[in-house]
Length: 69
Image (cartoon, rainbow, N blue to C red; front, side, top):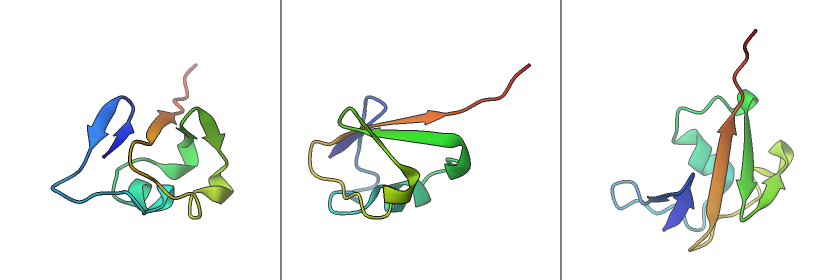
């Protein structure tokens, strides 16, 4: 299990452990151009999403940027 925004994630028995952040994001509806990802308290640069692997117990925070005015 990993935790995303405080919620345990194990979608339909499909574990994301050993997959990359990019793999996880591809399975979601996030607009990757408008988000920031933090893994275990550290911000992950977008250029590192594909090479940053998830491990059991990891905690991700995914923040979407919203424009306004």
